[in-house]
Amino acid sequence: MPRFSYEGVDNAGKKIGGKIDASNLAEARKLLRGQGIKARRVTPPSILEFDLTEWMVDNGLAAPFGAKELGLFTKQLSIMINAGVPIIQALEILYKSEKHPVLKKTIVKIAEDVGAGKTIAEALSQRKGFTKLYVSLVKAGESGGILDTILEKLNSHMEKQEKTKKQIKSAMTYPVIVCIVGAAVIWGMMIFVVPQFVDMLASTGQEPPWITAMVMQVSEFLGKNGLYLFGGIIAGGFAFKAFVSSDQGKEIFDKVMMNLPIFGIVVIKGSLASFSRTLSTMLGSGVPLIDSLEICIETIDQTVIVKDLKSVREAVVTGKSLSEPLTKVTYFPEMVVSMLRVGEQTGNIDEMLEKISDVFETEVDEAVDNMTKMIEPIIIVVLGSIVATILVAMYLPIFMSAGGSG
Image 1 (tube, rainbow, N blue to C red):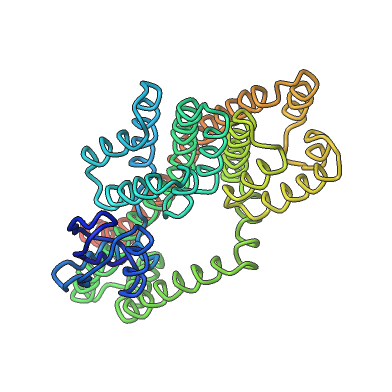
Image 2: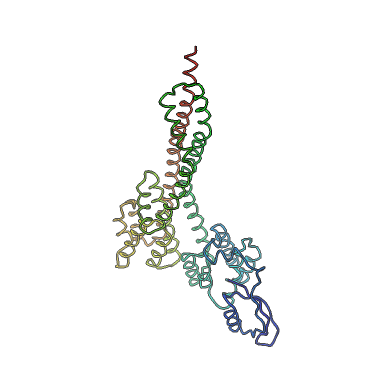
């Protein structure tokens, strides 16, 4: 949002000047009048003051700030509030120490809103980068007078959730990167190495064995159509991304991912770990169960699981317990449902959900470890076999020629 410079007088007739954020000149004057300032001159920002980063954030082209910056901000704010530092002063201290330019400006805007009489939750809700979960927990903390405790819980929740996300991302990324590198090496051999042997064999007039002839044909095909294949792969990637971006495509993709060996376990357990920990944090902060379920559903990216959890929420709205509809979700373990039922009976459902999330996160760790141990040798064997086939195909005629001459 542009920042306008202004000069004027306040209610006491004192000259005053500064800057104000507004979408246009008329809004800037209106905001100044609301603050009791009679503006004599309001100047729009010059082209030299244009902030590319902020413009990209406002237009959805860049993230405002990452989980790491938000986690540090949350932790530091919690510590200062717990120490009795007034909220405006705490935000001022955070502003001075913050390095991220977008978060730095966001802190200023939050402080301005709080100074104008808004609650912290209201100020956060108007800023990008703060999720509905974050705002709801802060609102609960303000209402209960335990904002520092809630912020500490929120920071812990984000750290554990981010760890689970990184594990799942790592599990998906590792085999893809290895396969891409392996494919690039094989492509290079077929395009640059094999033709050298082809020329050498052609000069001898020797009839190549079937395996050599096959590799030569593949090399020739890649040499003639390599650019078309490369373009096709890129086009296919964009088409796949567009397909997954659609509602129907995303649902089909998520169903496939859930049913893959090992991968499916990581996706399911990771999503359920996120759901359990988020719900535990919400309930432990005093947010009602129905509202907590709605917010938890928004934090999950898996459409199949989201659809099932919406059915669970609808059942809870009709008066059923949380554990009852979860028994109908086939991938939700019976042992976990039993633990949840015990939590409902004892009134410690938030504590039980935290233990359940720990169970799921442990299972995600084990699944990722098992997947890595299984995929690594498979990829090595497959890529190694292809490279070995190429080498044998190229050197076999040389060995045959040497044996015949002997």
